[in-house]
Amino acid sequence: MNSNRPSAENGDTGPADDDATLATPPPRPSLWKDMTTNEDWWAIWCAALLLLIAFAAVWIGQPENLSELVAESATEEVSSVETTPENAASSLEEADESIETEDTESTEDAGSDQTETKADGEQEEPYEYASPLKPYLAKPGKWTDNPLDAISSSWQGILGVFLVISALFAFANQMRGKSASAFLAAFPVVFLLATLAYWMSGQSVVKAYNLEYALWALLVGLIISNTIGTPDFLRPAISTEFFIKTGLVLLGAEVLMSRLLALGLPGVFVAWLVTPVVLITTYWFGQKILKIKSKSLNMVISADMSVCGVSAAIATAAACKAKKEELSLSIGLSLGFTVIMMAVMPAVITAVGMDPILGGAWLGGTIDATGAVAAAGAVLGDEALEVAATVKMIQNILIGVTAFCVAIYWVTFVERDPAGPKIGISEIWYRFPKFVLGFVSMSILFSILYSYMTNGPELINAMIGGSTKTLRGWFFCLAFVSIGLETNFRQLLPQLKGGKPLVLYVCGQSLNLVLTLVVAYLMFKVVFADTVAP
Image 1 (tube, one colour):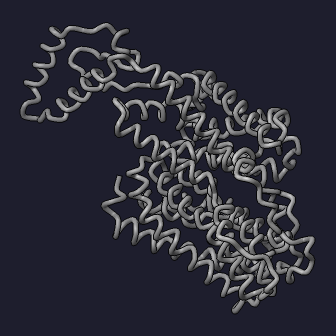
Image 2: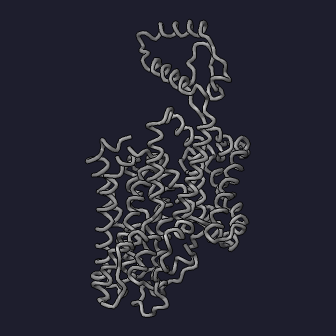
């Protein structure tokens, strides 16, 4: 995403009349070259490597008697649940006797560094296996009066996260033909800003008002970009899409396939029913009611707003041969409204007491950028994040389909040029967001490990809770800092002032908000309510 985008002076542009300024697609690379240079593929490789290391750590570090510890903990938990008020006194007496006569195993053999034995008469904590990597991957903690409390016990883990991400992404940038040294020079500043956002969200009063890290990360970036301006040397580390795609592939390991399938069917109705209706209606509205002269501008804004923001705008612009300034205008509108929606919608959902599942589905179907959807969902909690990310990635699949259909429509009805380039079915594959494959693959793989491996639930939960969930949070936080650093309202204001494109976007997004909420309610709370309930 480029922050220095040209804008249309009158808010509307004429037809594409200069082939040199057309947003034409680049030559198609080979599959191997694509897999070794494309950002989507590298998001999969980076996340897969992190998951491999994280899983290897919990597998190698597991206690030899993990099965016994888990079984004993489950037995104790069932016993405590079955205790009723009528036999509570006798149960306590039995517990006291068992505490006095019970043979205590060696704490070293039992791996009891993760358990705590309490005083007489109190129940032992359920056993929970923790990843050996947990002390080395952390985020700033909570604090009340002394800011140093947030990092005094977690600085080692924060440093570990910094070293892991900086080394991994420097290597990825180098392999993608970018400068690793430029990334390493800029990344410490971006990471420091993300740490600052986590630190501010950890203050007890702030936390009580549910002002999460995503909001602070966005504000930190916006303040810099709209006051002193984002320094050029930081731009190699401002990798919004790369950060968020890697985080979403990591999220795939947390979403079991059974859960993904449960959310997928209603998500398909929300994404694949609402999206084409909004796109077609918005395009018709722009042509018949607003009388926008440039059909390509009309189409790019409609696709940008209804499908998936920048990615859909770029794909559609190439398909309908839009001017570069038309693409820039559409992206500018999308970024401006994305920033507003990702901050306002979670607040509205919380204020009206909306169910997190419904709220997540609404976010996933309406906010343009995948990163913004993920972070806005995270503000509402893991359940909303899971639903929002699933709906958005189902919607992302339509990027290629939309570009393919628009290209056919343009060649067949708008240009009517028999000598024009032919559109092949392979266009869908080229446009398809490949990181979605990573998300689904990780969900399938870790669902199999969870269900069929000995102690699978304990190992996967330890991996997620002790490493990958922490890293995923950092990737989202870094993405939001990057969004803020890329968004300069002074550059966007000329595009947001009056004019038909602005009216088109506002009207189209309003329809999108209403229609998505209605369909999401019907699918997630009525038709598939029992299926999607956690």
